[in-house]
Structures are given as C-alpha cells and as structure tokens.
Image (cartoon, rainbow, N blue to C red; front, side):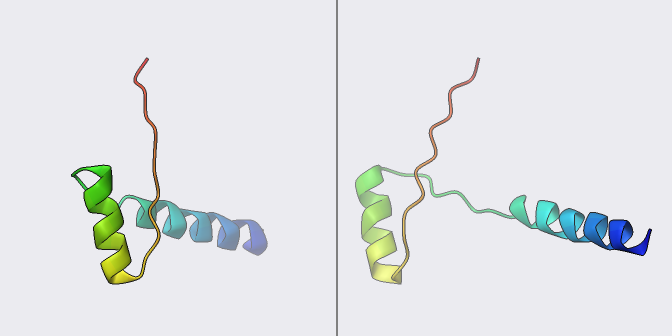
Length: 50
C-alpha cells in the first residue's frame, strides 16, 4: 500500500514539472544559435492537430 502511494506521489511530482516547460518561440536557426551559446541540445517537437 505504501509503495503504491509513494509511486503515485512520485508520478505526480514528475507530471507537474513537465507543465513548467518554457518552449522557445522563433526560427529553428535561432534555436540552434541559442542552444550553442548555452551549451544545450535542441528538442524538436512535431505537433499536428487532428
């Protein structure tokens, strides 16, 4: 019972942190330039509403 509760709470913590993402708004080239300056990688997300 405690293990299930602990896993549920852990999942909620990770799920709530995903909502805090700051998505870059700009061109792909600008994203690569900013990522290179900050020493980070670029995540490209393709979204298509249905």
